[in-house]
Length: 166
Image (cartoon, rainbow, N blue to C red; front, side, top):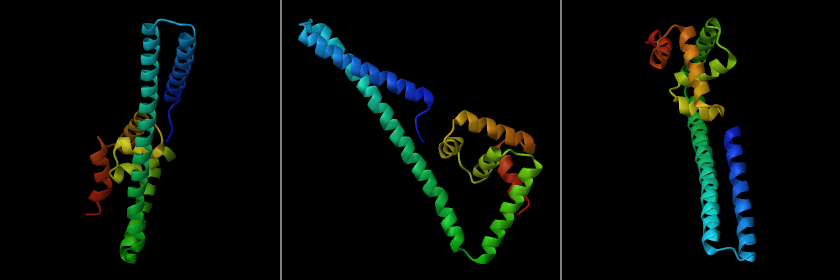
């Protein structure tokens, strides 16, 4: 998961401010500018550098979240392969039923992917992180899924598949 286009632009502009401030500080010091002016430039450069560090820290946090989510999704798959054949068969039949229903509802490939993650209980934020997209996009896809399924929301959507099993 990388930076969005707007984040990249902000990062580059901030880097330009840091570099320009550093150059201005060197120039001011060599030309004998008043210390008050030099200190203002130092403060500006420090604030811009702090913003850059904060953005890098945020990116690192997002990457850690994404890795954690990928590991959490991999764990049930590993357990599923180790379970008895009866459970594995039921899982495969449920997966086939979900796929068939998604086709009946005419969900797009991206809606199908989001739909599976909603059934698994992932939050909009987690789905957006895993799909490397905006939360707003996932919310719109989820709304389209609920509309096509004729259900009011995520709980009714998940329950739609579970009701007939119990």
